[in-house]
Image 1 (cartoon, rainbow, N blue to C red):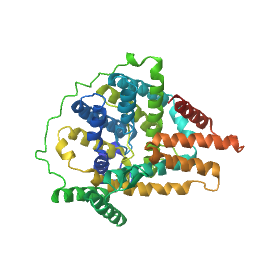
Image 2: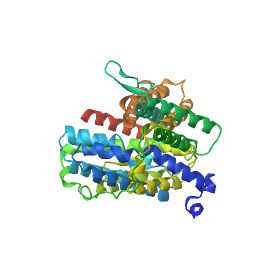
Image 3: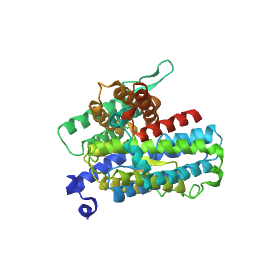
Image 4: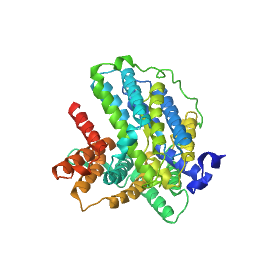
Length: 429
């Protein structure tokens, strides 16, 4: 059955490999189940309902990605987008969370229109090869920064912004142990090396008493009623929300697109000059945004952590299907999902990040008009904690440098449009 649905042999994979990859991806992104309710809870939303909507929206997105696009990409409410939702739209600008959900809904409709009409694909075709490679490397740097933070290796510092943390803490020590387990096993071509590393650290954490084993593995999910269909679309239809919707659309388009391109390229699903299923994958994340807004959560998007599952061998939608099933199971087994500590998944993200950095060799370093925008793209992502910001700086600098050096003929019209939209976005911020 799995062979007929996902064409496993054609993608040189097996059901077992896809299962391991799906579990690996889920473990690296399962933190969103607990983080998203906390962030959206600051906007006044019921955290129990957000927990359920997060799991359901993630499962919906994963299933669409699995059966429609057949790509190994995990979907869930995205980090960054939820922070913009809670801290900017509701917290700073004073709108209600119902209106913010309405903005997410409208951005999802725009997203689908851009995808269905082919405009989004046309925009993506305008991404220069150097920026595509830089997007992959930048996502790698972004993942590395997340991993270093969650493990405690990098901490905040009032004088220098960041510094190294307590290298003798158990979080750091377990991260280092997990990292070397993963690297060693993957070098020895042990299948599921990343998953083994994550589980090893989790078990060690329980044995040493740093993580509590769940007292009860099963708990009934709370009600989703407080957030289900609570979006206020009519409250969004005024001039003040144009900027908010524009930001949602731009961030959704380029966060999701950057992640999809980066992870798909890592999986070998986007060979140069050959057709790919990128269009279907784009439609999958577009519809997932609508579903998430109706359930009561911020924008659902492709997760960069899917790279961990790809590194474990995931190549088809079966990986995404497994992720979706595990999100549904999380509704009833949330105590077990909570056993995996952040410092158990950090080594996986750090290792995958290192592998993604090799995309930098694809950049033409002899041409400053290609190399400089690519460098900015990769560097800005971790330093601003935003994939979208890195893409924005890359596009704008690419167009400016091509124009002032007399290389305007090398510019794709889509590249100019995207750069202009980002300039407008910054101007309206």
